[in-house]
Length: 74
Image (cartoon, rainbow, N blue to C red):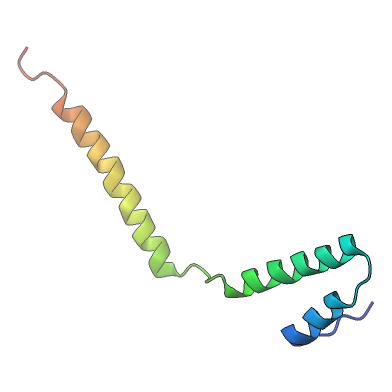
């Protein structure tokens, strides 16, 4: 099986000429999934580190709340 890379317009034309409705819709769905995957930005190390820092801050806030709830000197 040989898979050739073709422009999106050529792929769209191929789907358009499929006679069976189910197969044509499946072709459009595959095409849509491929385009979505190409457009989705890859997570960068910077975005990962920001996410980790935000999680640490949420964890710290939870710890501080629990510490403030402890009775000191009861």
